[in-house]
Length: 155
View 1 (cartoon, rainbow, N blue to C red):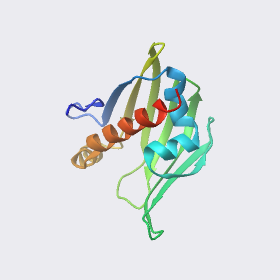
View 2 (cartoon, rainbow, N blue to C red):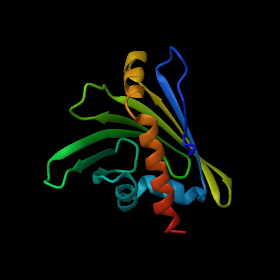
View 3 (cartoon, rainbow, N blue to C red):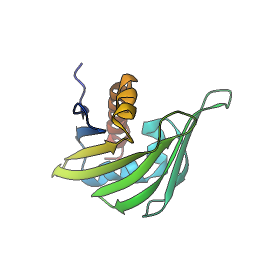
View 4 (cartoon, rainbow, N blue to C red):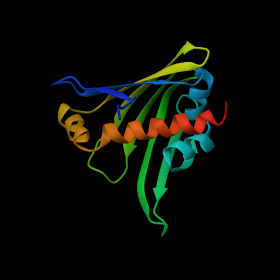
């Protein structure tokens, strides 16, 4: 099955560009990034903090059935413009990966479709290439598929 989320990583650059078109109105796509209850459903993680404003923080945490934390990430919003863009840092805790800078841009295509373009800037080309060795593309595609599924129920 073809991945609907497209990933572009130019050789020698320290960035990744991720593009996904959704069969969702722009407002609903953006809501999937600003409403904690929706984020938890499509990301499969617990939202510990989600301060949707410039200089606000965010933190997500995933635990196994025994309550052990298996994933946690955090960051700070630098820009938060509803239905347009989010600029934030992204740090996976307890990993060797340094903080990343993420630019998320939201665009309405039609009344019922929209596009998300994410540009992720890594500290180095080596850090980016190391991340790409993980099932990163598959994971973000699965998350976006789940986002589409969860938000379809809100239509």
